[in-house]
Length: 571
Image (cartoon, rainbow, N blue to C red; front, side, top):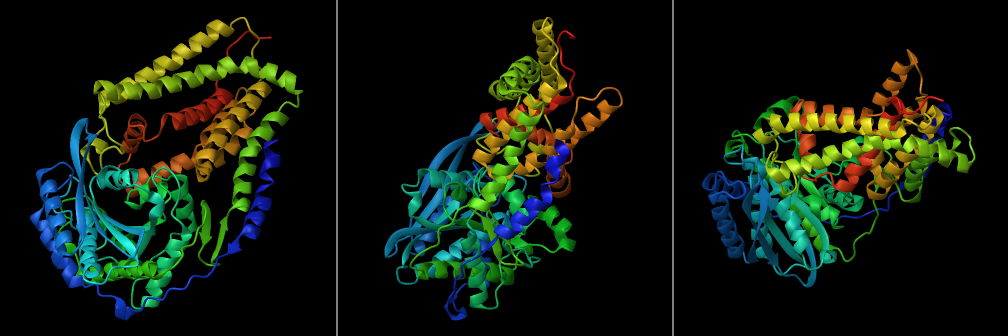
């Protein structure tokens, strides 16, 4: 049965290529003469901000002073500002937060939002590039537009707090906004001034769901081309689009906007591969200082942002489009809508079809066989659920820290140094729960017939299909994680030497997970095995919510049930 499914792969690839459609054309009209952004002026603003307000991470005294200064600057440029104050729990203690929200009223109450975060990583001192650069661009743009006649649409500039802990400021802004539907578009500015940047990247990842619309990214690119002499913002390649939609955990301020349905993107500087290591050594370290900032780079990044703003302000209507999608740069075609959903639904259906065709029994007989498998499955699933709830308990009693949303920040000691008592207690608890689960199954099923391998496989494929259906309903591109699970079709309940082959197919089912662990934990973030500690914190902080945890553990338990010896009376 498993082999037959793999024969469909070429057909699906042909279908995917045939289903792509061309994009409607957009015309940008911004000319170089209308751009007034000055890199030297932006650098001067950044210099004053980052050297005057060092150590301004969220909740620190200099954070409050920086907010007061920012409000004063925006007000002097003719904007109407207010400071939004609230509090969150990070590192298990209250942390005061402050957003500076400024408006420049336009002819229309519809809004264009631009955000940059004034907080910094606790591991830095000046936090120049991250995000003094974005804050300086925001200030200088406020100065430019404040000196002109009222714009066609209302401009809202937000200097956000708590970006380093999960875009908390932007999340707060959109959650308290009276009508997010009134926001035409959003632009986030982050990491835009280092003297070794060679271009602009666009990030469209939403926070836990959705992906920024393609029309805004194309408009940004076409506007930069129209204005002439500017860096052309890069749309991420297909693989990055897939992973960005499969793992929608944003790390810049467009995330909460996109998740709320606002068309938004983030501008960030790009680095040549030979300087990637040098950049990493500056990122979230005391080496992120004003001396590495460049007026010419700020001019480029600031002018691209100004050009996009002016283009948006000149438009009478705005495209509407749906996600998810895949954009192919070379052919300038996009895959979205019914054809893409057909692929998603077709993939999930494979598990249900495989479940019902495995064994080829009448439905009534199959359900009776499943009933004998259920204790075997629950004996593995319920212990995993108990282990997840144990992490919630660890937070409640203080063994693990409580965070508002994201655990700590990149390069933070809290991430790089696991709390070993919590790790050990988690592993011991998991072992105890699994042992108890198996004991209960053996006690209850000791007088019932041993479930047949074909019944176990049929049941487990059905459970896997249910888990994949949940993924489809919540975030379809996350089915990427389920793709290697097709290898579970090859598990046959072998004995002896063949059992090792079944275990291998089970392990290979996690290929995408292993690849992402390596890519983000070892290659990008350099956290190595500490990435596993970060995963525990993602569950403990409920960054991975309870329902998603149930789906993840359900799929994992179905795989384990395929290779773990069932308990019962031998027939």
